[in-house]
Image (tube, rainbow over all chains, first blue to last red; front, side, top):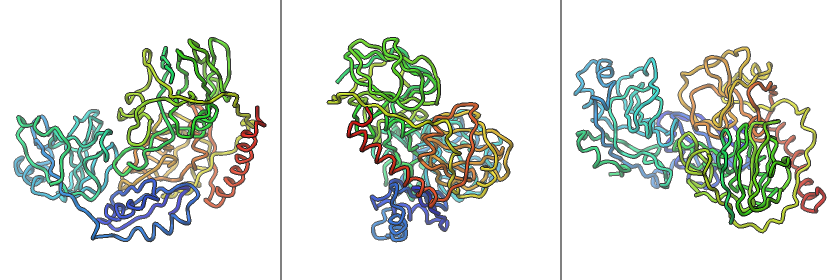
Amino acid sequence: MVGEQSLFITVPPGTAAEAAEALRRDPFWLSVVPAATTILAMFPAGREEEARRRFRRGLVPDPINRRTRTIEIPAVYGGEYGPDLPLVAAEWGCKLEEAVERHLAAMHEVLFLGFLPGFPYLESGHPPVPRLATPRLRVAAGSIGVAGTRTGIYPRESPGGWNIIGRTPAILFHPDREPPAALAPGDSIRFLAIPADRWTEHLSFPEPV
Amino acid sequence: MSTIEVLHGGLLTSVQDTRRRSRWSHLGVSPGGAADERAADEANWLVSNSAGTAVLEATLSGPALLFRDGGLTGICGGDFGPEIDGRLVGNDVAIRVGPGSVLTFRGRMSGARAYIAVAGGLQVPEVLGSRSTDLRNGFGGFFGRAIRTGDVLHSGPSGATGGRMIERPDLENRGPVRVLPGTHGGRAGFCRQAWTVAEFDRQGIRLSGPPIRGGRADLETFPVLPGAIQLPPDGQPIVLLADAQPTGGYPVIGFVPAADLCRLAQAVKGDLLRFEPVSLKGLAKADKIEAMFLDDFAAASEAGALW
């Protein structure tokens, strides 16, 4: 649908991040924001006809130029860093260690970012977990949470309703960096377990492998 | 280049411009910027700054500013009773301020946000393409926060000579706020009743009134923009403003077009608002007429016909 300065469409699951990236290569667009199955593209005022044309052309995926990055995120699981790990393990019907192994073994795909600058919504494919009945007023910066079949990471302290299973020292957002977020839609994420006493070695932007 | 000392910050005064951070919306960054971008642009025009120059956005009450080296300033938007050295000067006029003079505000008379422009613009670092302050996330503008007593601001060089003012038509009988279709149904029901402003901040305006049906919190998250009207489960709609998150999970039952959003950015708690549905075609037609008026206005003001 067309708005005053925006186009909004629904797309099949698994395609939004790539389609948005293809569209974003055209500097005509003021913003192109994907979510799981939707894309919102903003265009300059008064150029609606041109926007419709460019939108139709630009949504064609460009597999040759597409770069997919794999990024490793260091994480400390459980204990004070992951207060909801027992809850999640119980939900998954397994031991704490097995729940961690499952999360580490998965390839998580960044579907989109939102909620906070740099906050990624990852599709993790684990058995669904309900959100916390009562959200926390404060979740520590770097907290890794699961809800539904997804994983999210809080780049800064914030209220939060996801189940916190671990925490990362990695910096996911800084406004002085361009781009300011470490992750982008379409990235593949692997978590890497680190011991708590090696926290300070990983206080940086995670780099693509 | 001149120096401005903040004697008092006012309730919530921050550096904003109209250069949105839309380019980074896909990374979770709010577009940000002046909530009433028209008033910000007009204030900049008064002091001959280019559009998009950084200004101060004052909320509900104004700051007290000491112009150490003097300068040229102008205020548009909400009327908080601006005074220079205790003498009421009013909005919508470029004011030459002598060295050591103080700009203060008597008190709110209308509107929610006043925009204070200084010739030469406010010199703060550009972050992600804008000098706006993201208050929630603590970056941009003046150290990512509202200004307060003791802060020192700097304005850039300017050749402005002053003399500009803006004449306004009578605003008392403004019509309803226009609403374009949303991504979800519910616009008709929303427009059928009047709404009261319950509370507001830079993220949005919460409206109160008889609850309307259709609100949900369990939709798959999708991208949204300032101007979107969200309907949470409690049936009390929220109109998103500049600092809204770029994604949300409530149904969007309508969009407020940019021109009308500037009006909404001046609404305060207790204001009664009426809305009417409009199509893109209808909007384009109305905007054409307004644009013609504005062109005439710009031409007339350039020719000196307004002062």
